[in-house]
Image (cartoon, rainbow, N blue to C red; front, top):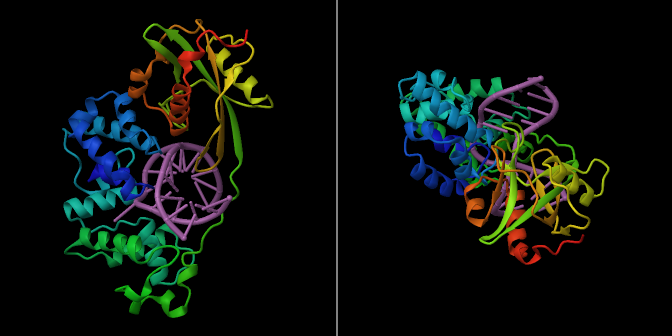
Length: 329
DNA sequence: AACTCGGGGCC
DNA sequence: GGCCCAGAGTT
């Protein structure tokens, strides 16, 4: 339940299911998760996004192992102290798994309550109070899940089906004809664009081509994931930025460099445009802690962001091996 | 309260 | 092309 609730943070149920199955196969209990290398954890998580969730799960499992005797806490208050467990997740796990009478306010419940009480701008404290009053003392978990399910299936954001809503008679927004404006949507500013040059460095080997992957910072955007050397344009042309990224890792690129199709990746708060260029050569950094030469098999085992995974696929599919030694000199 | 933090499905 | 998703952590 803990794992599924964390996976479901800002992620749709249908997207979570295959990840949940793979995760439980690989990390069947807290001990297995705590003992696993972070690289393995991120690889199983790859594609789900919000990678801090995976890092926090890993840390939390080690807290449970090292300080809590291997047992996940039972109460919402104690669960709340684990990294990655906020108000919602603590309430969901405690009420559903342990029968504690605490609310669990997710985006669905927020919308349902805002409409029930015709509240345009529900604050966290207002929501907590309303939800706490509503939780059934006998079946708190079912009650919380029922509210969430109602929001996910009937009281949906755009075209709610009030005609088949069991709470329609008690819904103030329905009575007032404001269902469509509750809760009031907050408009977000247009996403700024950020462009990057990406260096796909190929080292031809008898066993096949190898690509240089480096590890980004441990936290922040895509923390802990592997990527091709990447630098912001910063006023340069894409190809020059990619060459600069290569130099960061001691690789002097020759002129040219074969362009691959740009990859657009929309993140929460900006639109990323990645311009990959392929260079083939023999020089490059010695493999170390944060730089590896990876063939197709090794590539499968590294955790990459969606954008870099797509670039890797494109590079291999474009036949990097045939370009060996043919770059412009 | 405002930011940061992914990725994809849907309209 | 914008919206939304069984939110959490940081500032």
